[in-house]
Length: 362
Image (cartoon, rainbow, N blue to C red; front, side, top):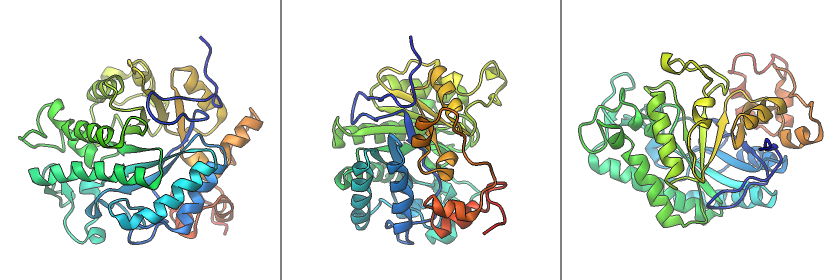
């Protein structure tokens, strides 16, 4: 068996094929308008990456409910008012030869009250975040709003969506036995805690059809995640046909797990060892060089996702394909470098808050 190359095509059981094994990982973005409509800065940031050779270009987290907003300037997909901008974006990404996807998101208890104008919501009351528990009717409405957001993405011309179930946001909160203390059909057993994700995935498949790509993002640690449970869910969703690809967000793809029972391998290995059926498995987490990406493919990943590396070079894939020894510019970089790579001023200012990422130079 030969090791797949970064630049070989990657096909899926459903939906369009990627032309290579590189995805643009979604990043927290502050560049859209206050009402969630697409800004020119956001459009430029994403389309430049599509033009730079990424096989799939995914938006930042786009919130599916007004009260699901997690940060200022977040892209929205909860209203038809967002359709014109989304349609423009999908067309430009696809014209560049990249598969276009929207990441569907709801911050849950992590929605700042000062942004949404009310207390955030959570599967259960959460004093730390000042969040109130969702009612049963509200859980059903949240499920519906994820599905409708996917329908909206399809109407805008996107090839698919990725459901954000990681990083302590609302679906991750449902999966967490620590955060989710409900006693109804959405709490208690792992099956119950995963019910909302199952219903969202099934609803999107039913309404958007077999040619619409469905991805899912999970993280195996922090926010009450249990690596054994996440492995069980990951294998179920990959082998059941519910998803076309799984995006494991690991913070560091080569990290040794915190759980004492899983220290015999890095985080990536605990997911590449799973049965994945016809689904494709990718990882994100501190992947900066072609050599690091190729090593993950050699160890069983189907594709890799780049985030920080894509901030530094909008054309990372093109540079890597032209030069096996390519390495991103060293950190910290100047603000001017980020501007030249297509980041808007608000995004540049935000990146300056990341320790060691931006120098003091203008």
